[in-house]
Every structure is written in C-alpha cells, then in structure tokens.
Image (tube, rainbow, N blue to C red; front, top):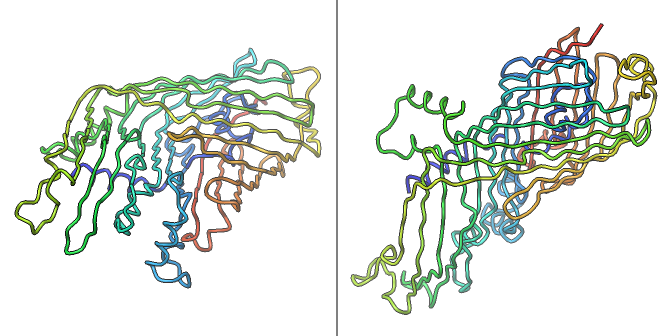
Length: 458
C-alpha cells in the first residue's frame, strides 16, 4: 500500500509538463531547433545557453477529460458529470506529462561546414492510459455482472539526465544532415504495462455478501531509483540530495540513444525536413525493485467474502506476491517529426550573406507549412498534425503561429515570439491560447522559454 501511495504522490507532483514541440521545430534562428532536428539548418556560428535557463518547457495533457467536464457549472451534478465522462472515455485515452530543463547547451561551427553542439538536459516523462474497467468498477460496482480487465492498468514514468553531442553537416545548398549521440543517466523509472487478469462476480451484493472471482491475475510493477522512498530507514535531506545527484550524473542506470535528421530543399521555396529522436534504451541495474502479484480465486469453490461472516476466506491466501531485484531494460519513447513548407517574400540580406556557397540560396521572410508528429507509446502511436506560419519581422524579431490537431484538442492555437538584443536572444512559446481564459477547460497546456547568447561571424 505504501508503494502505491508513493507512486500516486510522485505522479501527481509531475503533472506539470510537454511532448510535441511544434513551436520550436524548423525555427532555424534558435539553437533548440537542433534538439528537434539534428539535421536542421543553422544560421549562426556559435551559441551558449544560459545555464539552467536555455530551455525550460512545461506541459500536461489529458486526452479524455478536463476539470471543466467534471466540475464545470451548468453541466449537471458532479456525479452526473462523472457518469457522462466514464461513458465517453475509452481505455485508449491517456494522461501524459513531460518536461525538459536544459542544464547546459553549447554549439560552434568549424571550417568544414559542420556545426557541433553538446550539452546536458534533465527530462521527466509520465504516461498513463486511463484504466477504464477499474474506474467503472470502483465507481459503479459490478451489479451488471461484467468482466473487468486488469490489463487496462498501464503506465510508465521516468526522470533522467541526458548527456548529448551532435553534429549537423552542410553537404550542399540543397541538403543538411545531422546525428546526435546520447548517454542516458536514469534517476527514477517506473513501469507497469504488461498486466493481465479478469475480475468478475457471481450473485448479488445484497446484505454485504459478494462472490468475487479473479482469473489469471498477473500484475507486474518495475521500479528503479525509488529505494529512498520505499526503505524503512528514512534518509535525511542531505542524503537524498547526494543519492539523486549520483544517479543523475552517471550513477548506475545507464543507456545510450541516437537522434537523426535532415533538411532538404526541393527548390529555393520548398523545404522538406524530418527527424527521428530518442532511438535508445536504458538498462536498470541499481536500486531495482520489481513487484509481482499473481494467482486465481474462484468463489464457487471457496467461501464467500463477507466481512461479517466468521468463516469467510481471505482473498490474499490465494495469491502470490514476489519482490525481485533483477535488472531490466526500458526503451525510450521514439519520436518522429516531418514537415514540408513554402517560403515567400525574399530576404535579400540572408541571401547575400550566405558565405558557404558562391551561388547562395534564396531565403524568405515568411513560411507556411505542415508538420507531422508521432510518438511511440506502449499501445501504439500518439500523433499530431500542425499547420504553421512564421515570419521574420526584422533582423532581431521573429514570430510563429501554429494550429495543431492532436489527441487532446482540435483547436490548439500556439504562439512563439523570439527577440534578439545584440548577441543575447530570448524566446517564449505557449500552446492552447484559446483556453487560457479558462484553464479548467483545457485538456492540454504548455509553456516554453529560453535564454541564450548567439554569435555570428562579422
């Protein structure tokens, strides 16, 4: 029980974070574009992010229900709203939370058409499918004699540091390609995705008597890094800090990954881009605890479970509980980005200053385009499509507007603004602007900001 309470508190504390970064994708004036596409164009010669502030992103989302759906005035009573929401939500709906905090991010160009970048960032990723059957059982009971599937219970969560080094190579005026290697240092990992079993009852529940049945139950929960919370001997705050610091900086649960990407100009005005991110995995060997609960119970063969009946059987007698410490492997949620856009209103300054080619490519102040995004999750892909318009208003000011259709909403409007003051650059981006007047109605919300120094050759 203590374990599940810890997990509930941890998940609740994490519900502030982001996944699709459509506002930053293809923004070639910002270094963070390289994190979304290692083969993205680079229009500067060096950058240095402000430590801990070069990129901060927070967002949370629910594909099935919002706070307004449950507590909104004029929708009926709370009980009626819950009944309505439960009938609408499916076991494919989910809750997701992500954050990224860049601790360090640097980049520089060499004399061979390569732009190198390196850094460290911390990422949290929590994803949980809505346990439809378990929620209905808890809310309505089982008067209709239904079967409830424990496989509905599926979630993953992790906190890790990522050390990375990448290069974007300018092959020619048509093509840039890039690759980024990553070393993962796991801090916390929790996953329970391959659960099985059915719950059903016989007879009625009159007079407090029920005849529950559990068939082929097999529930598995893997954890790494939760030892300080699960151990009986509590750590001091200093010990906790030292423990997580060692885990964050290559302390034991390690993994490797890679990002790849490209930018290809079909013509001066048509640009095609794509990237695959986080193709990798971690092996968890330190502070690993796996909990397994399995067995069968048939009330036709045993006494009924009645708390007031002296001969009532104990449900726990028919199940086995194991705690293991075997290492396990977790894969990263692979992400795919692809886009096609069209540029117009030629930017003569950029064309004249592209020193890499004798015949520089034309550049444009405005772009309209379509971006597709997909992320691998335990039961399939989570997808999004974005149309966008961006404009370079001057040498120092840039803006981008997006409209995104995804699992959360069909009306996600986002805005990014970026300003440069000498060599200092800052940007601010936010999604779901139409819901900011009443955040309770929002099924997804995110904010991103960053500060860095950007240098060009004189």
